[in-house]
Length: 205
Image 1 (cartoon, rainbow, N blue to C red):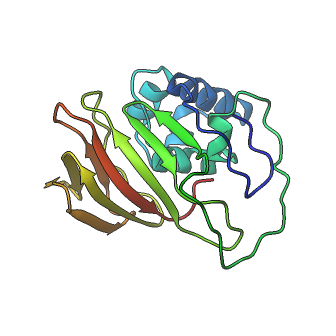
Image 2: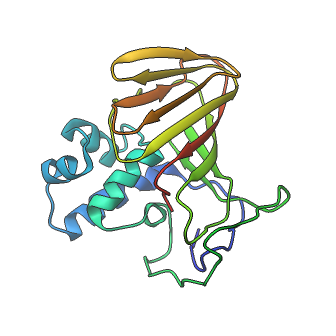
Image 3: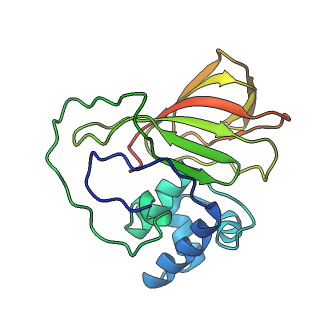
């Protein structure tokens, strides 16, 4: 998947999450950083980051956003099969975008979670709206905090959402809204796929 012009929606496709860990290691070594120093910059544990690099654990997009920021890359760089290049910026309205339901959407896969972007890129807009499909099972991520805010609304299935060490079970119609600096994590411990509408800040792409 190659990102070019801002505001152009790429065709829907699934990108193997197996390449994320090696990309993190590659970019980390390019900057001469140790696991310890990158973990400290990204606000993640050394053990978790090591497991991600080795492909033992998956990493959510918001945590990957913290890693990307610490490494001076965009989140898209960890999924892009082509050489990393600077995007061509196209002037866009700072107050408005319109995304039609029939348009193709960008989709990313990371471990048990599939993220479908819901809006075009807007130069002055800060929200990142997504539909997230969370498959059952997989390794449970460690709770962590990062900059911004996060909102999740359950469409179908159930979701175990941990906030500041307390677990909350969310059912269809339930939602959670928090400052992302509070340690949090979500996990699907059922046998069915859970679908969530999620909005986070800042934008990941």
